Image (cartoon, rainbow, N blue to C red; front, top):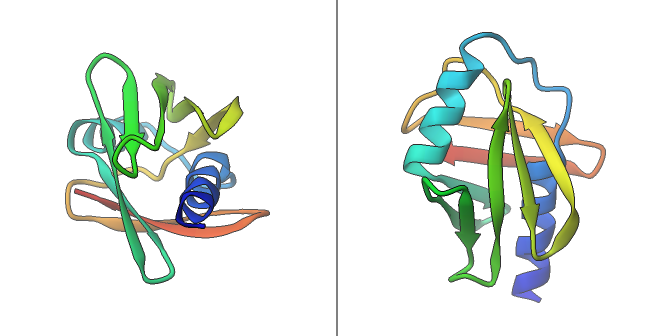
Length: 113
């Protein structure tokens, strides 16, 4: 059950759309991939770690995959979703900031560590 919730949260975070991105979004993505994030889903907090070699993991490695930056979007491919998902992140966010990504599947809060 917990893996399903995490997979859903990861899918929400990775499939979110409609977030306005600007030139400073690249700075947000650097913060995200350097420091990692916490996905907040209900009362659960799920750390997601990114490595410099383009990999990420969550849930003690139960969710893992690759990441890349495409302009102002973070694109990921994971073991729980065989489709690459690209998400525009908001501009001007730094370590410690939180924001909400929303898609047709719902919303997820992201906190940059």
